[in-house]
Image (cartoon, rainbow, N blue to C red; front, side):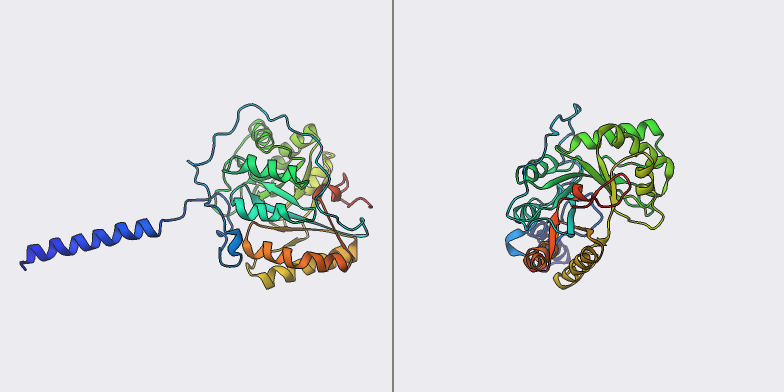
Amino acid sequence: MTPVRALVAALAVIIGVFFARSFLFPHPPERVAIHPRPSATALPRTTPSAAPSAAASPAPSKAPRARRTPLLPPTGSPAPVGRARLALIVDDCGQWLHIEQGYIALPIPLTMAILPEVRYTTRIADEAHAAGKGVMLHLPMQPIAALDPGPGKIVVSMNDETIEAQTARDIDAVPYAEGANNHEGSRATSDPRVMAAVMRVFKRRGLFFIDSRTIATTVAQRTAQEYGVPNAARDVFLDDRNTVPAVEAQLRLAAHIALERGSAIAIGHPRPATLAAVRALYPQLQREGITFVLARSLVSIDGKAPRP
């Protein structure tokens, strides 16, 4: 074989391997959330749907959504409300349909925090509401790190009018939202001016705000209290370590806080390991005296959980 023919044959093999690999192992599309894409190995029956790219996301409706009716009673037959109440919030919703539907199917009250303007924003809000789950806006806000929190983000370079207008659009993008917590936001939630503009909108809309506490210098809850917005703050992140045993340990920590203080708020994400841990552990926690509640039941003007 001549050198020229050998070179042509080698190039043909390389090109063939490239196209075969691209066909069999396509690159995953981009996503707006910071957390790693859930692994499909932990729960074979709840593999995540493909995360949306910006181009795949439907265009947001320009007209405000008018669906703000009361929620249905929580699904299942939870024990009577006692002194140890635990609110579970599932952040970053609207991206992994099957895992989020797994949470919605659980027979306990929990709250879905849904990102605006992502692929399944409206569908997850509709399904969560129909199942009696809580629905919140997961408000994208600027972090300290150079990361994009996604569509609808609030950044500190915005003036007050722009912040208020964007916050209102984000609220309108999530049907049935009764409140919100921050997505990312370590930079924005530390800025009193930014949080004041956000809270003016929540005050006008009659919504609550839960501080995810992504940084120790946050002023989000304090500002909510100054503006008379019902508020609370996260106590535990469930899945900084993405394994079932680690999530179970954090869930037990949240239950311990609830038993000791009377209530607690725990935040997790649409990950197979997190769903598996909650699914496995909630019956035992109920037997130990934990009552699962919607996040809205633990907010108040002064930030103290109302008595049951």
